[in-house]
Image (cartoon, rainbow, N blue to C red):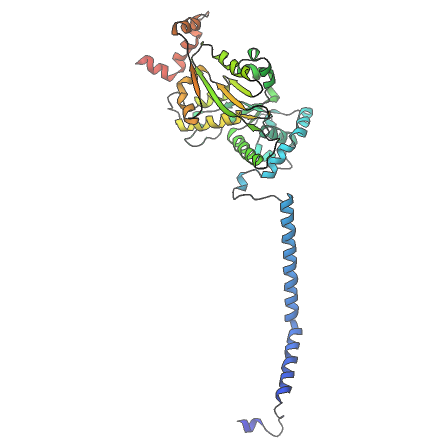
Length: 369
């Protein structure tokens, strides 16, 4: 075999040095034939991707791109959007005042707060109204609830009505505006001044907003007043005097709600005997009502007090479940004097103690026994 391969016309084998030179030239030729070029292109691609990623990171941190703070970003308004809402609230007030608005930001409907805050193309007047709720520049005055909307651990479909309340007038002269309805009346809370929203959405946004503002140490954020005490009472026993006294003790720091509408709707939301829904469901709703009514845009306010309607005594368990450690008192008077005051009206059938015979399931059950 080897003899035939070395025929007379074949070339003799090259030396080792010659073979090394040829191999090196082949490697150089193969490299110039595409491998080096592909390697250079790959390096350029990697540099371009790295530069783009670095640019996006910079935009993310300076706030141009949206941040994904958690996996539920689709269910939450972005932190920057909520904080920006509060920073712009002073400018937006003038805009709303000059333009006016239809009821709730949408004529005959609810203001979609989350959409108004997140969509840059949304109606700026509606956005300003949502910002006012977050900034506690407008106050909860009413909730529209039904028992079938309340579950043990949640609720849905409850409508909340907000309006800017004139607490300064109440603090200046408590006897002239002793009841919550008097404050609402003095605040011009009719028609276009009422903002209607989904209550659960408003509570979720407010809580998220307050947490973010606290983490940012935003001094312009709403203040969450501490619930210091609650007054339960029987009718015609001087409870309004007690409420006015709590206000007069320190008008600057104390906010007092005297027989306000939202708490009674929550306290009685499941019925007096809790036949419509559970005690836990009513208590959860009451917690959110008190939270929203305790948000203040007045940095001097510190303490929150409620005097509930006399009829709420029958659902006191709801309050005690929601706020087990909050102090409360029950005011009463000598029964004969209460009855004389109750019945001293032209039509006895309109007396509070008589009306409850037909409106209270507990009273009816007691009478039937």
